[in-house]
Figure 1 (cartoon, rainbow, N blue to C red):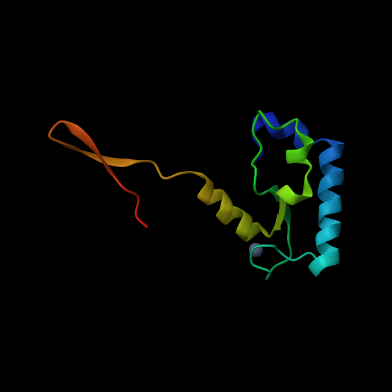
Figure 2 (figure 1 turned 180 degrees about the vertical axis):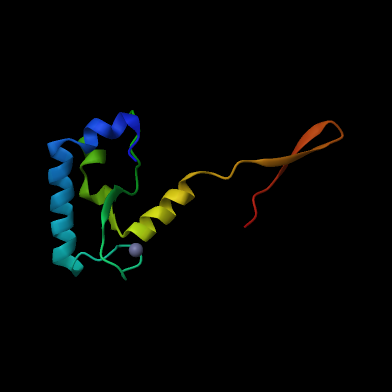
Length: 105
Ligand SMILES: [Zn+2]
C-alpha cells in the first residue's frame, strides 16, 4: 500500500499518465517484461532510485521522471519491498554495556 503522504499523488492524472507512458515505453523495448528478472511480464511501476518522501512528493523530476522508474513483476517487487526494512539491531549486554551484533552477511 502507498504511504499516506503519497496517496493523492498515486491517484493523480499526472502519475497515471506517466505510468502508462512508461509501460508503453517498456513494451516498445522488450514487450513489457519485468526489468529485474526478465522472466515475467511487468506488473508494477515503482520509483527505483529515489523513493518518494514527503519532501520530494511535489517534485516532478523525482515523481514523474522515467529515469527514476522501474517496471517489475509482482514477485520482484515484493522482494524489493522486503529489502526495504532494515533488520532490527540485535544486541546483548556485556559488563553493563550494550554490544551490537553485526548483521549476518
Ligand atoms: Zn521479475
